[in-house]
Amino acid sequence: MAIREILLLGNPQLLEKSELVGKSELEYAKSVGEDLRDTMAAFRKEHGWGRSIAAPQIGVMKEIVYMEFNQPELLINPTLSDFSEEKMELWDDCMSFPDILVKVKRHKTCRISYMDKDGKEISRIIDNAEAELLQHEIDHLHGILATMRAIDGSSFALQSQRHLLDQSEFANQV
Ligand SMILES: [Zn+2]
Image (tube, rainbow, N blue to C red):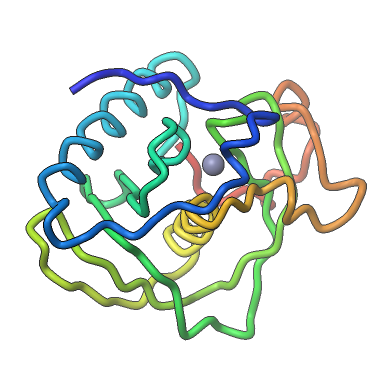
């Protein structure tokens, strides 16, 4: 268990693809999950937001996501499918560029499939804030950042200007 350094925008490692976790690496994945949990907790303490984090953000190039949505959850080798045609536009944030907001489009609903910390296969439909969160995190596993999903050139803002933006264009963050 350790608080790790979060890689920041500009670090080329954030643009690399992560590798699948093998069945024999479950214990390792769990220890990465503990570091992700501790790192996110430290970030939240400082910034007041952050509900999910992907392993490459702490320099571990493995397909692992840690999320605290309804409950703490470790998602190993997560994949998305069954995307809804309906999309939502929202201002997205990221622990790898905590001062910047980016307006992106995300599918309103989709299916998440993954292995949990005990190696159990799970598959379920997610929507809205949870769907947005996991589309963001799974992009990280593929080396894709929210900045690369910006709708257009006017889709960037500083966090300090957040109060000037349309508040309905935020997912239920924090
Ligand atoms: Zn992020």
